[in-house]
Length: 175
Image (cartoon, rainbow, N blue to C red; front, side, top):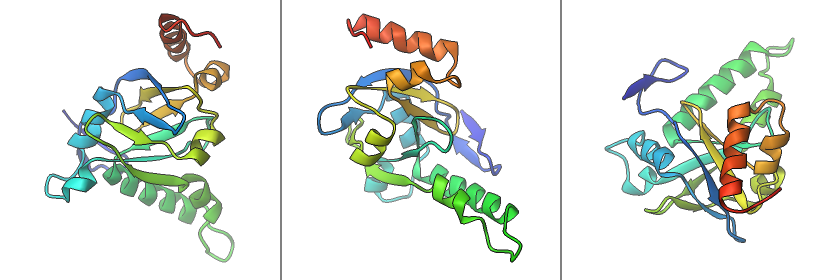
């Protein structure tokens, strides 16, 4: 399936799907297979093979979660942030760097054939991800939530909350 990103560029695949994944003490977690397949599909075919198995994650600008996407989407997101910073320039015409600061707190990380990567400690701590991480696809990116934070969020949908509760119940976990 081909879709179009925010700047009208044709892309392969959309991030759709969801899963509750276990996070180990070192921060290792596996990207759900549906999201991993999209990460790989959206990587440049003529690029360096090590670049294909990369994920970009960062702290969400407005919610208590992380966002994840592919490297090409990272470039498109930066272009959109830069345009917003210029659109909200100060009286002297200087771009509003606050917009860039909020949106550029990202890490580009390798993942293995099973989709495992090490989630860095700062973003993990910032959004309170502990034993579990809930991944949720949103088209051009996906979110990674701590289950308790998602359940407490007024912006998370009832369906997302029901999913997290369901998966925790399946594992015999209570928050």
